[in-house]
Image 1 (cartoon, rainbow, N blue to C red):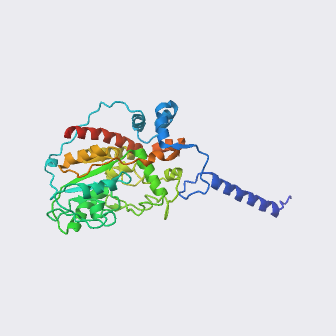
Image 2: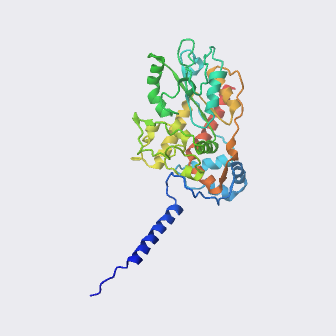
Image 3: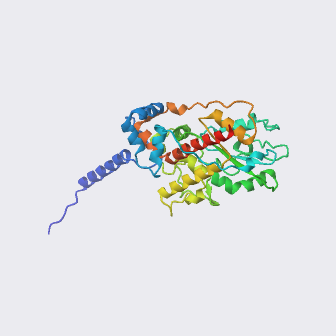
Length: 382
């Protein structure tokens, strides 16, 4: 009978070879991890975002690659085609007239500002507190960015529910869902009384490409909102539903790494924050497909935006000011100015530019819808 001899040296060599192979694969293959790799690719040819906006106008191949890639929503491809090569829109939107708007009363009613990240909301908040002719003085003596000032009206009521006035009683950058579940209780606590109130929800929207890149740059500098506690359907969203993209800090994160994180809340942030998330199974993945979730969230966001008495567009400051003044019957003492879009200087590669569109497809549809709705609202107040 033949006996197999154990070659100790050869076995050790085999083990070493396997370990080396595993290490090579570990560093070369994408891991899906949110850990920053010390071997970030440097071979990609990068250009300013403005270059890609110009290139896609004239390069049919790039235009097709970007607009006809796989998306979750069936209308995303058409939306990107309209965004990059606009055609005249003949669609007219039926606006829902709110009879109560004509008698908005700053002495008893409450404006609720839904503050989406990286849309110029801090500047807009400052306009509301310091520049709006309210008929009374807020009496804020400290910097309201770090020291929220209740800014009560003549009746001693809170007229504006925003970061600058009340802080974040419904959660850091609370979305539509969280605000509607929380605001009555929060206002009762803040005013120390229970009373009937009318809430007028407002928000700002920004070009999705610029907004997403702005959030990436914010995280890249080590700043973040990871302390925000999400809630939906009366329940706190747990870590096993939304896994954090990083721990402690994401300083220096590349755009590829930023987009790689599955649960990055920058993904279609504007749509998610304006939608009623209870209509799309909140943050739970069980029981709903990604395609159905995308359709439900976008439809809900459009409906909620339509019902808002006012919203502004970051890129259209003058018209935003005019629409607010006409909607609420209050003038600003100073004129809104154009906010510099620094994201046009961001250096990104062609594949990053393409991949980015998959992360803003719902926001792009919502933004194009909002732009048409914005024009209709302006027509009604001219």
